[in-house]
Image (cartoon, rainbow, N blue to C red; front, side, top):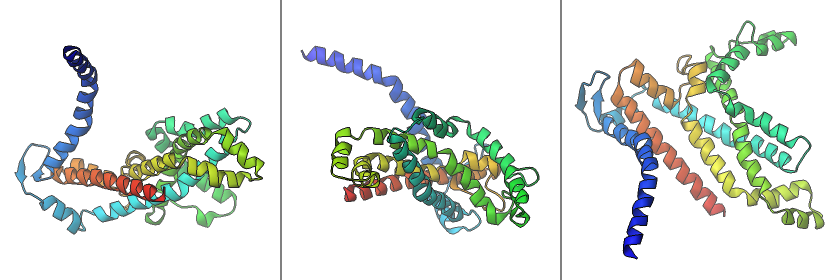
Length: 293
């Protein structure tokens, strides 16, 4: 009997080994190496010098690096994601969850931006924001609002909002699909009982559906916040953190340190801080939802 259990255990271990190896190689090992490199002053040519916590001290004290400005931009994006993107996604999910006509078609349309390559979306919005022939400025001029037409991505005052708009738009469908699955999982008996008691659609959503899908809402909030902290690709395509670092976020700052300033130690330090921030926010959000329960 013991021999059979041992053989089964070995078989299970061998079955999980490829996935475990990928998990360690792709996720755990880079995190450990980033933590190790963050204690060194090193460059791409292999030269490195142990400096302890000097990179962390410089990151938090030096205004030349601009970490706090980049973090502020990411936190602003996180706030917009939670208080703008998620309510829109929830509203669409609640509407589609009622079983309206063309439900499947609307699901596909709203989810389509998630499937499109971020580089393609970036190029699309570059054309929309083009100061000469972009549809945004063309429409403004056509309505006689020439004074509102701007160089959206090249002006410090408008660049941040112009970058955030497509970032929020791209993932509305992603959160909508998660929340839609939760709405569809609400037992029909609960809805019918509420309707028999005279509850309106708004009351059903407020007192039955939303409390029922609170677990999925927590997951969506965590994804929205941590995704905002890690945001990179669309911002990199649109502005690369410019103009004058107006749209800089920690990820673009990290790439700048690694490949433009040749400071691998500082780039690794920013990566470690991003990981810690994502874990911290995930724990805080989980604690908030636990208290509400």
